[in-house]
Amino acid sequence: MSANFVRPLRKMNLTSKEVAQGIIKIGETICGIKLYPYQYVFAIAIVIAVLDRKGVHPTALFSRQCGKTETVAIVAIGCCVILPGLAKAFPDDPRVRIFSKGFFVGIYAPKEKQAKLAFDRIRKYAHSPRAKEFYNDKGVMLQITKSRGDSVAWSNNAFVLASTASENTDNEGETWHLLICDESQKLSTTKIKKELRPMLASTHGPFVQIGTATASKAYFFKTIESSVERERDDGIRRHFQTDYQGVIAQRRHAYEEEVERFEAFQKMRPPQQKLALEADETAGDAPNDVHLEYERFIEDELRDLHGDIDDESFKTNFRLLWADNRMIAIPEHIWESLAIPNLEMNLPGVKGYLTAGLDVAKGDSEKSDQTVLSITLTDVDHPVIDEKAIVAPGEEPPIHYVKTVIGLFTFRGDFEEVQYDGIIDALRLYPTLRYLVIDSTGMGDPVYSRLRDLLPEIQVEGVSWSHFKMKSDIYKRFLMECKAGRLRYAAGPETRTTREFDDMNDQVTGLEKKFIGQSSVMVCEAPEGDHDDYPDSIALSIYASHRSFEEEIPEPEEAEARNFGRNTYAPSGGQAKRADSYRASRRGRSRYNRAA
Image (cartoon, rainbow, N blue to C red):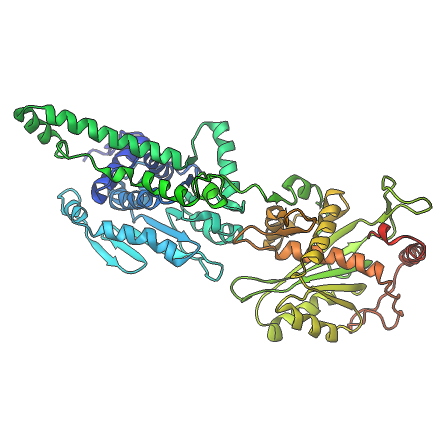
């Protein structure tokens, strides 16, 4: 062999779109299904994203029961049986080289039943006679090596796993080339960002989300908005959407094409029919009215609704209109403007007028919910007088104070063995803390009683979130402070790297609000599947600041106050004077002007 011999590069002389079209064609053949156009363009986009790995993550908002599962099955099977072989045939092609050791697909859904729905379809097609015929082809030579209730594997090391992504499930540890989330509108932001997306870190594969509209605008909705915006910038289509009318139109068109073809076949002479059948064995098939079943299904739905296309469930499930009775409580740009970039969270020994809010875990805190403690510093030395407020003659304008969230602590595990000690240790970091408000709903009630006994030197108050008017008032104050710029939060460089900070931002900016009927009672909560532990805790700490002024908490004696065995309280002269002045002025003011 010549010393100068250079092995020619073995790359495919095909575009990614052409490769994708071939893979989907094989997937359709194995599954015995021909995709409709709305399914086909989405399937092609997924495979191109798998090949190119340029950070394109396709999303699909499809009308209910229109064939999302078939699309996922064809993509998964096509990629699994073809890509590892292409990697060996073209080892120098960077698009497929990564699949030389196999191709791995993860399918996740909020509930196990939903994830298995897609997987059962994949396993059914993988074991079909059409699939076995393909496996036995001399150029393929594949066989199934594992087939269980949640996974199937082939001899080329391709692998598909279906799993639930419920809040009580730990989904960390897997690595995928393609990750598909079904019913994405029901998955929480935290679950997606902290557990699912990281599974693609080493492969840079696409994170595909499929779902439908709902009353909550969580991570799926935000991803769609981002995808549409990015499409405008680079022209790469990322989002695919087809409502019930689009589905009906495309399926009826497919039926009409079959009618025309069958009628044309019937008019042929026998020799021509023979040639037509040799070219396409389905040329003489009668039109299949299964294409019209979806249209009939929708007609039945509308008949039950008396033709009301504005019915809430029909709007979200079939028209794909997101419910508009909910609004984002705190826009991202407002929340980001409140950050203090040179202040870190959880710095010990901070003194001042400190209050705290504790949101108690509602479920199994080992797996899902968590207890969150927030610490807020109220700047009593610099009152903000609301000169624009409308007050009665002789009354003083309301006085407000800037508040800063300086501490965020999370606790998981058993309360008796872990959480009580952790909460008290966190409170000990702040010797001048004077008021703690606890969500005493459900499991929070015994926690409130226990902490009230353990912390006699702090004013402890319980608030029930089940009291809608109370929660409404607390959250109205929280939103008012945010929008007025009177609530700030520590956001130093180290703080921004913590999971707590990310979770706080996600939950606060994902918070939704709506009003009950025509009343002024406001409901502020996380989208379905998400959490609101952090905003609940912060709102309680702000309420604690307000309540501490209302209750006129006596200044503790220097030797006795805040003594956790480590520190004693010594208020600054300015703080004490400002607090005394404020309390004195309050006694002569109307209750309608109260504001902390």
